[in-house]
Length: 271
Image (cartoon, rainbow, N blue to C red; front, side, top):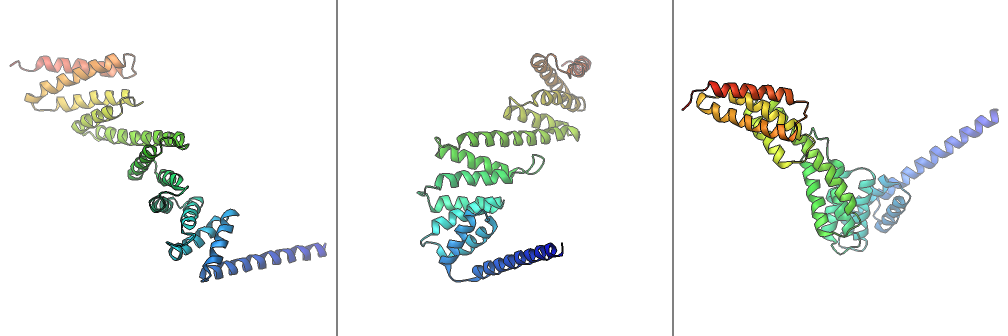
């Protein structure tokens, strides 16, 4: 039993020494001016799946080899190592740069795709700012235009659908937000714009309902000389809603608003 404990202890010590030696050798390699050795080591690390070490070595080699032999391979594998270590923001920049610097490379198409993919991976939840999402959409659309026969096109279309849906959710949240904060005029405009932009949205019924509700609140609190026109618009919006969603869960509420609009119109002085 004692022998087993000593043997286990020796194995652990040996492993620690090997790890420390490996780290020491790696750190020396990073500081070394033997760039050929660095390149070979970086490729070996990458092929072994040790992407963090490969990434750091490729980054270290980038400036030295720029315009020289291996510069294309270094740029490519540096970008791939960034992706493997989930440095997507930097990877997007690297892959975009690669596609520009090496337009005739066999990796050029994949670099263009990965530029967009990395931006897609950085795209936040729809509740947050969607600037990166819009950038990713633009990159995917550009890719599809340049490489319409690419094997990546099914992926591209899937990512585009997902991100456009995200933008739709964001736009609906903003439009509904105007209603929720009682900014009724802005709500009518924003919800109308939403319906024009997303005619097949699953939020169409909700958007039309809140246009009626916001429109009524806006109309009933308007100056008398504007009230007739605005109440009539609510009536018209109800007619569209009733035809489109005749079995809507909102129908009773909308009919009540319709009745109130009709009554208010009757009470307005005739010209």
